[in-house]
Image 1 (cartoon, rainbow, N blue to C red):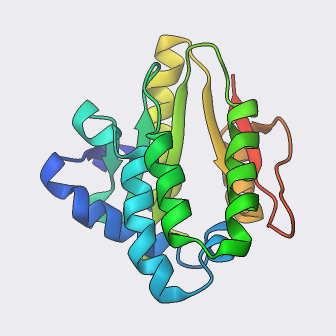
Image 2: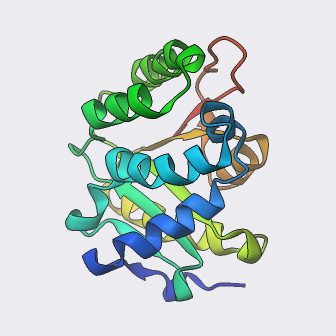
Length: 193
């Protein structure tokens, strides 16, 4: 079991290592694998997606890692946002033609559920497959949620699998809607007050 005190801020020099951990963590994620069904395309596209969707956490000091980089969480502080243009360009460049419109729809729906008041956003959290089930995800969540509580601010994320949704529920997140486009897996926007 990883203790929360062992979670630390990731340095900018650790970006590539963190992206490797997140890429491994999401390799079997229902939404990611639906969006990039070919493993080699996923392996090339997902690190770029992480940079666009949550990479602003690194220079802001809000990227957190577990010991040995077994897990990583990229949090965006109030006022910080993903690079939406880069995300859309990446989808346009790497997704199969038949999946582009549904993927764009999913991101439009995500934007509609995204809180407008100041909040912390968790675009990405993942644990290396060989380290899952050891409390690393919970430790990463608790580390940042304490800051949210101190500041009296909500936290927002999107759950891309039922197992992840259950983890987030244990930490106080509640589903505020349901996102789906075409035959995509369901994405749950979740908020923790």
